Length: 287
Image 1: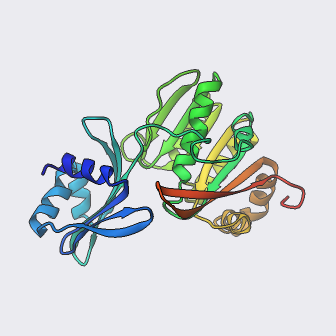
Image 2 (image 1 turned 90 degrees about the vertical axis):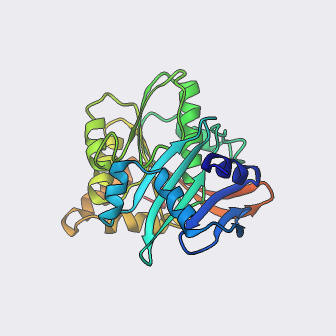
C-alpha cells in the first residue's frame, strides 16, 4: 500500500486524524474516538514519516524542532501534519482536511455569524481547544467574504490549510516558514500591503496581539484564534500576555476594537468531528 492509498483509505473511514508512531500501533480518530487502524513495522512508519519531509524539514527535525506543514495528494486532498519526536522516536499527527471549504450553514453555525464577516473594521476571535474547528470556521467566513465582497484579504497561517479560489476578493495566503518567518513580522508587513481583511492563524504572543489590535483600530477587519475556553479566559489571556507597562493600553485597545468572540467546543457526531458554538458580541457589560 502506498502512502497516498493509506491516506485515502483513512478518508473512506471518515477519519479526521491519523497518528503514526514508531514503536506503537497506528491509530485513527473517527467520530471523536481513537481506534486502532493497522500494525505497521517500525521501519515502515519511520520511512513513511521521512518520505513526506523535505531535506530542510528533516534537518530541522534532527536539530530537535517540531515540524508543522501541509501537503496535497495528486487528487487535491489536503492534509495538515505535525512531525515530532517522543521517547527518541519519530511520530506524526496527520489532520485530514476537507477538499471543499464548508459553508457556515453546512457547519450548522447561526446566520448571525455572517454579520461579523460584513463589518469593515474590528477584531473577531474564534476560540476553543485544538480540533474544535476554529480553522474551518474561519475558512467558511473567509470564503463568504471572498464570494460577496471586492476587497483585499491577507491570511497568515501555520500552515495553510484551505486554498481559496479568488472570486470577488483578492486573496494572498502567507505560510510561516515558507513565506514569512513569524506571525508578527507577517502582520507588520501586511499593514503596508493595503489590506481590508486580515486573518491571523494564531495569536501567540504580545507583538502579534498588539499589532492585530492596532490593525483593527485603524480600519481593518481582523480575524484570529486563541486556545481559550471562555470569553473571560480570552480577555485574561490577551491582557496577561502583555508586559505590565502595556496592560492598560492593551485593555483600552481591546475595548475599542473588539467585535465578537465565537467559542467552538468539540462534540461527537455521527458524521465525524463537529462543534457547538457560543457567540459573544461586543456589549457594554464586556467592555
